[in-house]
Image (cartoon, rainbow, N blue to C red; front, side, top):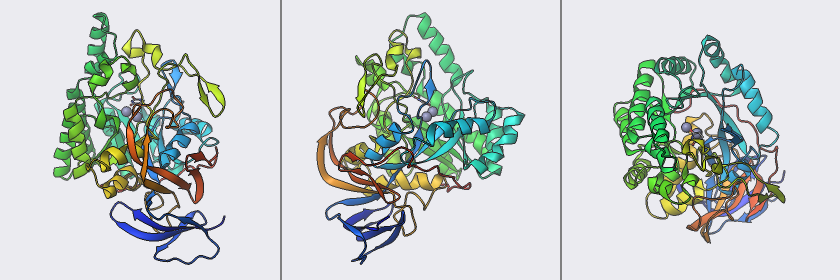
Length: 473
Ligand code: DUC
Ligand code: ZN
Ligand code: ZN
């Protein structure tokens, strides 16, 4: 592979902004400095451009079966969409839907390995606990999996009881693993959902009304208390309420190793979006809340109460009875229309893996809510550190993988489904004006997105064997 010299860019990391050259050799960053000489290198002029480490999205659900369908991005199309938005590493959740954890992971590799177009890791869902599963958990480290996800909602499907969560956390902590938690109150949701349906309340807003914010608040604190008693670190996924963030702050002020992730939709949208004509487009769990929650979560990103921005990317078609064109093929996958008469049948999940960085740049950095350094920390570096990938990922350092985004801060565009590369028929940010967008994206030194053109291919993404003992931020 020829060397590449990115000349005169403005390098932005989690802690610095420096004007420098950056040399790529053999998939890695070989040097950073002023006026680097490399006669054999192809030169890319990055004058006036920003240079970021490739984004790390710690939360995707690709090719995930749900209800009577499947999330509409697979491990190729989702990775490609990620790359267009500047993300070069994603971490996907392995469902515990096979007789053993090992078989579940093998099954997920069968789906992912040949399709992968960016680098990827796995988290393991623990949704059914017995002694055999407990005995298998330590061996996840041999598979490069260092993270266990548990749920306090989805009774009878994914939820573990508190004692089971405690056992998972304690064993995980002994192994240097990190427990991740989806925090809502499953019991209350079951009761309110049954009552809503019995009363004939079937529209999308009832998805949010049957999942009250206090359930998330209580469950976040419960998770923290269980983790503290188990001697385990904890990572709360998709924090969507101001009260949930309050619990995380309370714990962190007391030195408890708990970290929080939010996702872009919780920063911009509210239950009012579910009340609109096309409310199903915003159905995911946990749901959208209020503008006050939006603002509080922004504050959490700015002041360190939250550590990462993931996407929970789990797209479905809005109208899966109408085909879309994808890479010259007609594609149609059942989606949100499945719940036209019953909100409980609307597949839960949103597109977002490609939106995350462009939207956060324009509406986070552009509006002065977070700094450019915080943008890099929240979309890349912190996740790499927490999940055992730093400094291979999430860094602009000699020796790091040359996952690099050349970002044009002056590029202005109107965003939406035509722009985003997700394999679905809608985009949550339709018509939003953006300023700043990825121009070139490199995966380990290979140019995979070049000014809106796809240069990557299925199979070039590598599975990341993660190391235990990730950082507590
Ligand atoms: N929530 C969603 O909306 N979709 C996938 C999984 C989840 O927790
Ligand atoms: Zn979840
Ligand atoms: Zn999720």
